[in-house]
View 1 (cartoon, helix red, strand yellow):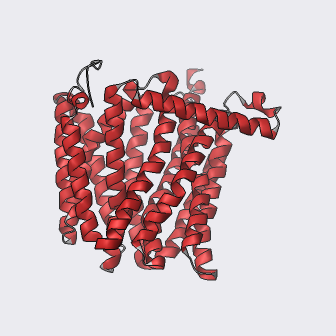
View 2 (cartoon, rainbow, N blue to C red):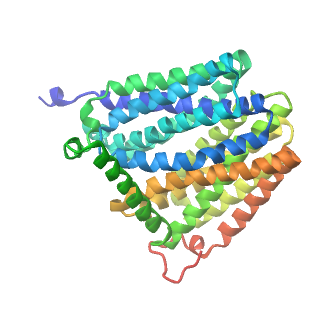
View 3 (tube, rainbow, N blue to C red):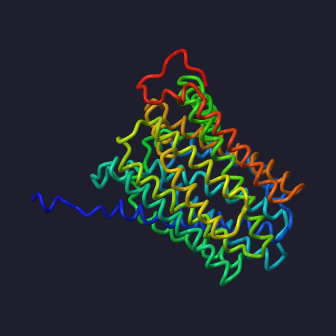
Length: 427
């Protein structure tokens, strides 16, 4: 009888496969899209402007998508999101063949992609607990496996993008991205509808479309208000760690999304970008695994300091835009060094945010990231356009060193080994 009741975790395996396919497609697109934009416009400022134009709509889509996921079946949202994402990517090479890609097309299709990508990522996060609960799998163990898988995919994705660009060209590589998103949607569609239920479908089914939309907007506003309060007012250590996270995202996002694509485009080797990003992801995986195995050997503050100093060294090497082997080595050093800091910042988010506010806080964090990252890319693009990629890289190095000095000197981050923060701490 016991043997009969034991079932293979088929639902979880399908969920993992779907997530991996979607993430792999996004990893390929993250390398290919900046290179296509630069190749078609020849203007670094266009990349920054595109990011800025899409920033606010992306944030609104993120907030509204989060509120929507509390009202409709989450599996269905994930499926639709992947299909919309696939369509937005597939339209790029089609438009390029028929009319030729212009900046306006990038804006339109970028916004269409945001409608698919952002709610889709949130939908997967909300589906995960129900999926593992259905198969009777321990959530904490599964999260460890999931994080390792994500790291592996982010290593394979940029390398795959480099191979595709080298053999088929930049626009043709997007067909693979679209196919991966479609495959992810089809696999998600095989999941039981029950794992996507919120319990609120019946409450909203009888409402008019107008009342439902008003409810979603109000929920999005309330989520943003509660999230800001939790992230920036209730806990000084949490506030400092959030600010540091935004600093990392702004500097590294500008490096990966603008400076390096411009640099490799200028030297006529755009395919090398994928290998550099894969090297960085491989380093991050090694650093995270090393920290997991040795975390208790050192104090959190010691890990934090070593991590920040190592990241500063890696950024400094890459910021000089040296020869390719040295640049690759700098990317590995940066990735390895970032592992402990990434793990610690993630730990503070889960440890310090109250369970009752976790959804609104993490949703707000994601929404804010969708604004600060494009703003940083736009500002960097103005520097690159005016003075070149080399100067832009050095400016980012200076910004990162300033972030490092602040993080090492912040009072709340110096006392991260304490279980409860002092009321007299200052950031």
